[in-house]
Image 1 (cartoon, helix red, strand yellow):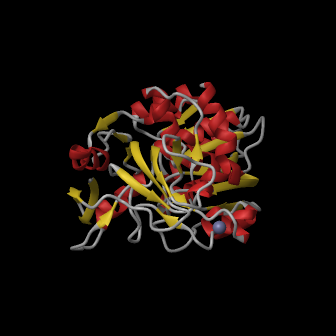
Image 2 (cartoon, rainbow, N blue to C red):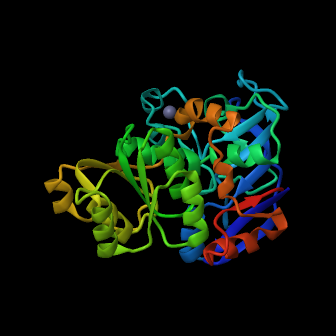
Length: 344
Ligand SMILES: [Zn+2]
């Protein structure tokens, strides 16, 4: 089958590899119907060290179950499923507590030697616990929104949950990528009254407004902080969603949170230490976050996608086939595309 591999910075290729096979009774093989390129794939795309064997890519997929191991109970061939960005056993102490990234048997798709979803098919460990079955006929539009449940919509929701978004709150979202835009949807969904989007890319901030943002702040750094303070009567936001992962974005997020507020960090951190320790302490901020416990949130988010109450699939603005995925990476890295859909 075809699968996408990265062999070094800027070097993404379509490879011919053996079809995945069931290697554990709890496995399922899914045929990938839709996958995509993630903003987090751009970090290794910018900096990965050369590797002859390469790394399979892709942690977001909607698929159809092709085969199941003898131990799989809740899925059968032909089921439509959402594949969360990592697999979890569903039974360890952390899974039971809902802290899925702490699963004792966690496996991040398309990372550290694990197979990826930017492929014709992928093996899913602990399929019963990992995959979310979708009992609906999905057209193209619905498939793209379902696909965001693998990562970006669940991650935006996680940022909002960790930041403590409540009805009536003023929320600020740092980052106008797909996660930030989904963070706007999540904040709106949780009842935020005012949503300030920090971003400067017009097509993206325009979509943010359609998703429910009430204000757009194109400034960065200290100027962004001033602007948010102006917009909030000098106080800052109750909840801030940090959806970038740089030191500057995290510093801004902490700066624009109001005393007693919360910051949800979901951008993969590319800095050695959380900045603004004094400001966060003086303001009694709750600063937290990490990989979203995707599967844990799907019971809540899937019905809203199926009903059309939320349409996060609108973040996709380009589609490529598996042979053209290298072009998709180039487009996203050059910010010509917001999020690239892959239709195998
Ligand atoms: Zn577990």
